[in-house]
Length: 624
Ligand SMILES: Cc1cc2nc3c(=O)[nH]c(=O)nc-3n(C[C@H](O)[C@H](O)[C@H](O)COP(=O)(O)OP(=O)(O)OC[C@H]3O[C@@H](n4cnc5c(N)ncnc54)[C@H](O)[C@@H]3O)c2cc1C
Image (cartoon, rainbow, N blue to C red; front, side, top):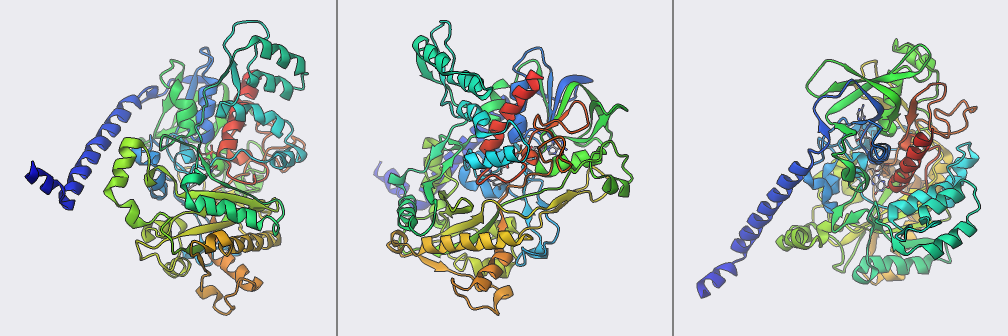
C-alpha cells in the first residue's frame, strides 16, 4: 500500500491516470451523443414538405421546432453542415472552433478605413456551419436588447417589432412566465397574457382572474443562463466597483458581470433549448450536409421549392414546398442564396447573367460591431492563464463537476455607457498566440504589439474590448460569380462613417479610464497601449486623438455580429427586402428570419434577440 501511495504521489503517473480517465469519459460522451443525435436525421428528402427551413442555426432551430409543433405540418430543415463535435459544448475552447470544419471561415474584402494591421487588410468573418449554426460557436453572451433598439426598428418601419411585442418571447425563453396548473377557466399563463397585451387587448381583469384561478409554477426555461458570480470572481468584483467609480464621469454607465447561455458548464444553444426536444417527431425531418443553392419560383413569383446539393453528390435535387420556404442561413448566406435565385439588384444580377425574379436591395445595409482590444497586465493571480488551464485538475473538475476554468468562456464583465459605448472584459492573461492571431487574421507584428506577453504562459492580465454599439457605417454582400458554391464578397466598410471613429475613440477612452480606476490599480493593473508600425509617427499617449484613431483603424477586429443584409421595414420603402411579417417583398411563399433582417444593429449581443424573434416569426407564419 505504501508502495502504491508513493507511486501515486509521483506527479507524472498521477497525470497519466487522470488523462486516461478523462479520455475514457470523453469517449463515452462522444459515443452517447452519437447515438442520440441520429433522431430525425434523414439521408434523402421526400419530394415535398409544407415548410422548408434553410439553415439550422440560431433562428432556424427555433423555427423548425415551432412550426413542427402542429403534427399536421410537415417540416424539412436543411443544414449545410453536420453536428458540431463535442468541443463546441466546452465554453473555454470556443475560439478553437473558428477556422475548423464547423466554420464557413469567410474573410472580408480588403478594408480601406480599417484593418490596416490585418493580413491583406481583411477581417475574418467566422460563421457557424452545422446544427446550431453560429449559436453553436459563439461566446455565449446573453443579452435581450434595450427598449431603444426596438423603437428604432419600429420608427424605421418595422412595425410590430417593439419591445412590447418581443417581451413575451423573451419571457418564454427564460421561463419567467408562470404556468397554470389548476384546470379552471380564465387560468392563462403569463405568456398568453403578454401576447394578448401585445395584441392590444385589455388584460388587467384577465390577469386578475387568472391569478385567482392559477397555481403559479415557474415555466421550464428554453434557454439556461448562468452568471459570473461577483462573490467568486475578483476580476468581476473589480469591474463592478470600477463601474461605480466611473459613474460620475460617464453618462448612463451600466456595468455588470456577464450572463451566458451555459448550463452545468456546457454551452446551451437554440439547438438544445428548442430543436433537440422535438427531434424524432414524425413530421420534422433534418437533412444535414446539404446546401441549398437556389429558391425556385414560378412565373407568378410564387415559391415552388428549393434546389439543393448533398455533400459528395454533384447533382442538384429539387424539393417542393407546399406552404412556405424560410431562409435562415444567416446574414451572409441568406443574401447569397437570394442573389443566386435572381432576387437582388437588377444591374448586379445582369452582370452575372442571372435572370431577375425581383429587383430588391438584397445584400445592402450590412452592419457589424467592431472591437478594439487593449491588453492590461496584472500583478495579482486572478486571471485565466495557459498554465492554469493546462493543469490536469481543471479537466477533472470540468468532467466530473462541470466546473472550473473550462466551464466559462473567460468573459467576465460587460459594460455600456452613453447609450452607444460598449466594453467587455475578457479575463485572459495569456493566450495561445497561434489560435488568437489566426482567428483575428492579425499580422504577427500587430499581434505582438497588442499582446506583449503572449509568449509568457503564466502572465496575469486581461483584455478590454472597446466597442461602438451603434455604428453608422454600412457595407454590402455581393456575388463573386454565378456559381452558388463559391463564396460571396463581403465588404463591411468598417469605420467608413466619421461617426464611428469618434464613437470608437470614446469607447477606448472608457476602457483606459477603467484600467486606471482604483479597483484595478489595487490588482496592479498596467495598460499596454500598442506601439504599432502603422502609427509609429504618432506619440503613444492616451490623450492623443490621432494616435487613438490610428490604433483603432489598425487593430480593431470584428465583433462577430454581421446583420441587416435583408433589411426589414415598410413594404413601401425601396431600401427594404422584407416586410414586417418578414415576407420577401413582391414574392409569395418566401420569408427570411435570421440576423439579415435586423434593420439596424442592436446595442449588444444579438443571439438571444434572434431566438425571441424567430419564436415570434413562427407565430406570424402559423397565424397566416
Ligand atoms: C465567434 C463568434 C462569437 C459570437 N459571440 C456572440 C455572443 O457571445 N453573444 C451573442 O449574442 N452573439 C454572438 N455572436 C453572434 C451570434 O452568434 C449570431 O448573430 C447568430 O448566431 C446568428 O444567427 P442566425 O440564425 O442569423 O445565423 P446562423 O446561426 O449563422 O445560422 C445559419 C445556418 O445556416 C446554415 N447555412 C448557411 N448557408 C446554407 C445553405 N446554403 N444551405 C443550408 N444551410 C445553410 C449555416 O451552416 C448555419 O447553420 C457571435 C458570433 C461569432 C461568429
